[in-house]
Length: 57
Image (cartoon, rainbow, N blue to C red; front, top):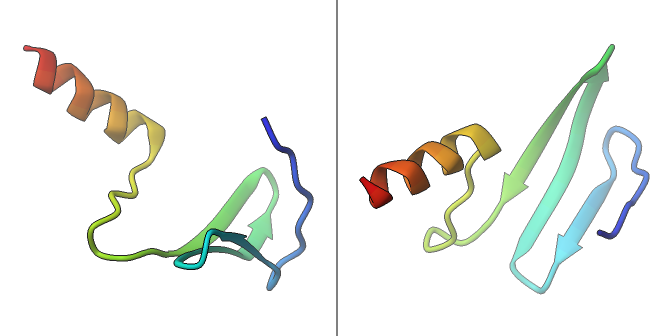
């Protein structure tokens, strides 16, 4: 696992077409902005897991 440290307003790039920007940090909550192509699915882990579980059922 790659671990990076970013401050609000700073961005992480994944390839040429995905960027993740730290929008704010408040206590233990971090707000992220994600820009990705429409054909790239972006989900919170719990939603992704639910989708996977439903696909198996």
